Length: 213
Ligand SMILES: [Zn+2]
Image (cartoon, rainbow, N blue to C red; front, side, top):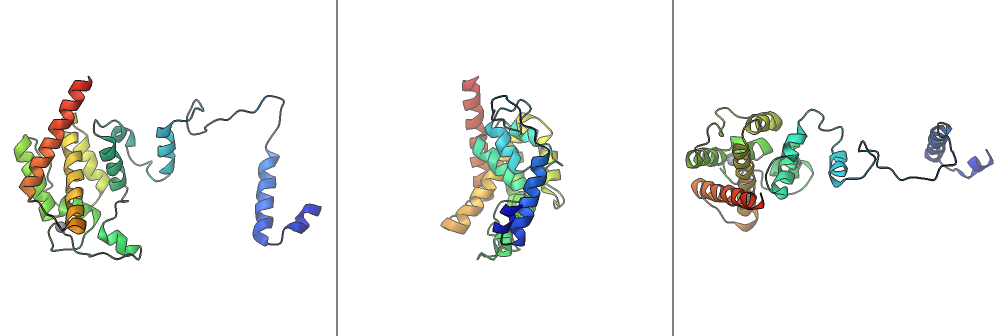
């Protein structure tokens, strides 16, 4: 216990006691040391498991495996994960963190910006979703009533065929890019122009995937 005299703070003493308790359950043997990654069953590191660990505890309520398997570009997949966890920096979140932002949605310029608003509830976004429906023949992409939960909304869009999920992913991705162009570059496209871009994006994606197979 002589070493304890070197601990000058109660925080240090607490850490020492915690460590001491942890060590009590460790039994050493003569086998050589091994490095194991404890977040996979086989103990082998994978970047996917490392990524999943970051969100551990925050998303056990959702089927994230399905999102991993979406046949879309990884940048869109990554964006989608952030979006569904309310981690995209819309102006309401920037202001909440003490940053500076115009609180008004730059897509409709009528109400405050939030993630559900930008994604589905905004009149501009609704118009984009509707144009995408008309251009592609996919039905029920747009929402008749305002969405409350991003995850429930996305489950509804995702639990169907690949092409529909690709369209939904590229629609929300392009709505976000349009929002950023308006906020940072002062450039704007109409909802119909954006719907054509989305249709084109998905066509290019599908062509690329066909050539890979
Ligand atoms: Zn809006």
